[in-house]
Image 1 (cartoon, rainbow, N blue to C red):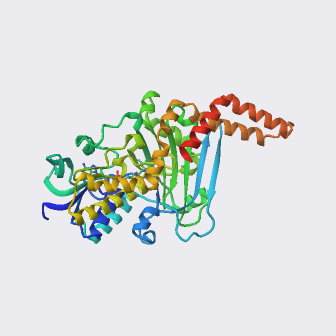
Image 2 (image 1 turned 90 degrees about the horizontal axis):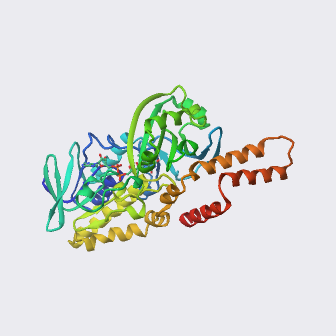
Length: 428
Ligand SMILES: Cc1cc2nc3c(=O)[nH]c(=O)nc-3n(C[C@H](O)[C@H](O)[C@H](O)COP(=O)(O)OP(=O)(O)OC[C@H]3O[C@@H](n4cnc5c(N)ncnc54)[C@H](O)[C@@H]3O)c2cc1C
């Protein structure tokens, strides 16, 4: 192995591998460095991989990749203290291209990294990058625990722990309100029992997103996803609200699993893995410098995440792809300056990823400032439905007036109008 490359990529997550794949395909001499034992050994995903961004690079990849289940059912569960309601969407027609699959990263990342290797990238494992090397302000490679390696350009895709970016001054250490701590368990269950419990056929999967009472005081959420022969259960919340409420993630996980809307899915299952990981929630305002002399930042390191949909992996793929394409252009022109590499920032800015993030800027801050909406709205919806379905001699007109009273008792009308206005502006 030579010690001078055109490009070095830090990390074999979806961002790093996408960047490496695009570069290798374009004839760039690229080295990928991963500290884990194998690609995916240190990664976590809840997780639905929405396939569009990979499928654009590798059409039809989903027919051969080690994916778990094709997610045909998406639900939101609004959790109250004594009850819950579900809003579900179920696709019944066979779509030519599926929308998303559940994945287990230890299997998927290995497969994906092999694609980059087959295209010509060199991937080395068990190597920790400790800092970016600089000469006259330009990044010229990386220092690792096995020695220094030089390159014209380095793509930093180190995930949510932005140690390298912080050391290099590309980002200031994220604040506790800009990071969520997520925990997840994988619970073993036979495939046919999963299908029975979730009402699925073989190969089909379900994703349930939970909000409401268990997360009172927290900017937090929960999830349940079906894998082939296991169920992923997890939750996350911003560090700032967890610290404020003195919540211990392990305790929260135990009470979440015992909820009536969660327990029946996992009863008699065997916990086979427990993981904790950070999710970047800094949004548009918390993003690092994406391009500087000799360096690009992609994926979670660039704070790319969508708190509304829970997407992260597919955004990492797109940013990695665009970073890889930019490096290929830079190699052709022989210019790895910040000015040239800024093509990456500009193309990413015009993509749906940054357009959404720009629009949603400040959304989590608004929720934290109005933290009672976390449990008040789900409770209002559940109480309203309870009232509507209960037959107690009242007329339907009386019921509607009672429901109005229930909603107003949970949140003042002026605040409801402000919430609708704010959410509308941030999402539309
Ligand atoms: C609990 C949970 C559930 C999630 N669910 C979903 C979901 O349902 N759908 C979705 O789209 N996204 C989901 N995400 C987000 C998704 O996992 C991330 O957005 C995605 O993994 C980001 O990819 P990445 O390549 O940027 O970083 P990562 O996947 O974190 O990869 C970074 C890699 O860099 C390596 N690395 C880091 N530092 C160094 C170093 N110094 N030297 C060498 N190697 C290093 C790491 O070992 C790792 O392999 C979830 C995240 C969590 C935590």
